Length: 193
Image 1 (spheres, rainbow, N blue to C red):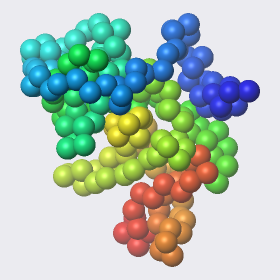
Image 2: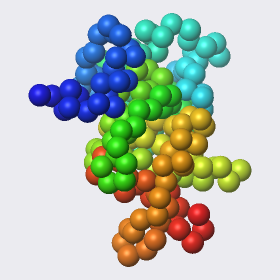
Image 3: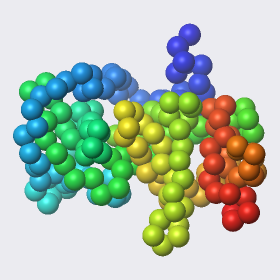
Image 4: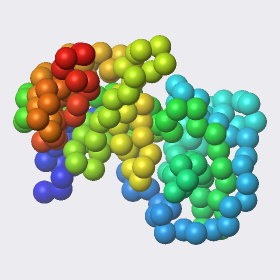
């Protein structure tokens, strides 16, 4: 039985996608083409892709571009093919987590997300959650999608995550956080939460 078949949260999100073909992302980590400079492509903080200042309105094209994203060692995000590598601008995170499924509670809880480009991502040791504070003090959760690329969790789902929060201990300190995928994901120290 595959891991996806055993995870009811991934099954629910997958069912919502219907008959879309599912392939893994290309092996961009093995491609080493020359860097050809930056192009006028931008991923806005809400996950909208732009080219030459105009939103890309074809979801299939956005999914294709998203499959060839790579984070370089210097932190720059690029589109990479076997023959060229070009820089793009990412305002916050290259993906947005737009749908969430939750099963269980406490240490047995399983959470999975669907991104704006239809990646299905279970929260686990490889796909962790991290929480940051925005300049305005708002909570910003992120989900690791793949190869150093993160998804910003939407505001609505942030509220759902906070509703799941509980106190736990991490390195001998009390934290407000949540259990998912067998791990405790800290949000903030319990004293300041």
